[in-house]
Image (cartoon, rainbow, N blue to C red; front, side, top):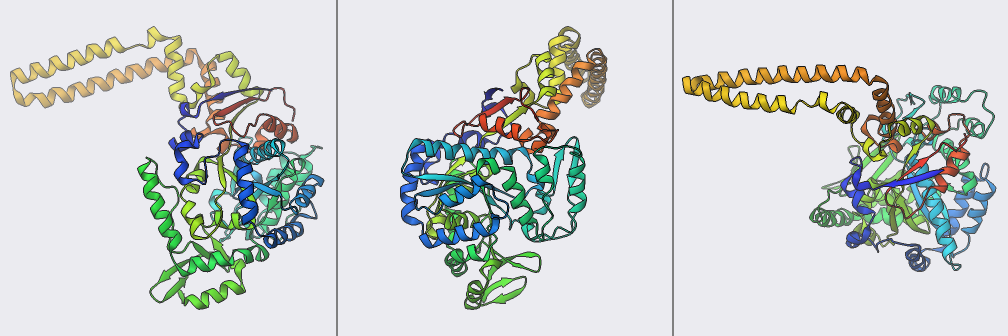
Length: 530
């Protein structure tokens, strides 16, 4: 396996914020502290140990054990046992419940956390950490998770259900599941274990088992936080949020600082950053003149607080409060996420202060580009640097023709002659009659269009001469920036393990992951089986 790196600054598919956040030095005002090395985790552990309640830890472990005991691996159970110790902490990433655990960057997130945990544990002996995946099971944006791209097909879970995706029933999941299974018919390898997971009463239970088995060898603990037992620890935060819009104001204050720093705030805060879950819906809680309204029904503050104590599981934090819930119930040191996640996390330091919760270290996940044999052989033949392929393919084709047919393609002299002729036409028209100037300009526009048609005809002819190479450019481009987005955001990871033997792929990604690498990592998979 060979790997190289490309600076994020050279790749326009990364946001300006993502390009900058690799160096947290300039973001210090939005953080507990910039995160540069595992020694920062050691300092965070000392503070978190004092802030984290033993009662919450015990409740977490008991709940977690109920959730995963029937399918957890030996490594996962060992890590859950380690969490009983007050000197053991978590390093966490999370995501929505995407179809069959895609796309690629979900795997990158998780293995980034695994490597960061290993680096921390190897750096000192006083504390331990274990890797955690937080399921965003209460997210209700089904359109964002219902599809995945695999083997030139778009698989989609068709469903009319609404509300938190984790609470979706599985009775309309069978069709997409059968399609997924047909890709691997007759394969006798590790994919079989994933395909054999039975459909559960709810999607969250299915996804939790799927992801747990996928990362079983790495000991990753997958948490389903949509739980009555876990939400009990979050009741004080929910009550404060209902009582006053302090978190909203804290975000607004921070947003001004973010804008002054030259960035755009990512997430929108509200006067009440909670939803109420009822009858398959995730309903916004909105302060009104005489209380708080849910779906048009108005509750007094006291009545709503009573409801919180009776059924905390039905109160769901939005994007502003979800991180506070996470850091309330987990003994967490670091949250690892994508650039978009980091952009909203830097809005939240004041929210954590309002809700008396310790703000964690945060880190942008690693980004990768995978090259299998089908890409590699075409890249080698073309002999272009990989970073060139982050441009639109039509630009690449024109660049290739310019490099290989420069003289025939270069019409600059013709266009220069045209612009000189245009000026002469307009001057001559004005010398005869001033009103003829607009006529001359219109004729010049028509002539320019004809010249552009001539240029395109030449390009088409030259493309025919290089048809095979231009097809290779198409192929490479569609795998490096499919639909002009990063590969990691488009393809399912099994795209690079077509036989279903995904463990070698995971191992290659694991080996290529340095949790403190801020540039895009390019991995040559030609020696990886699967």
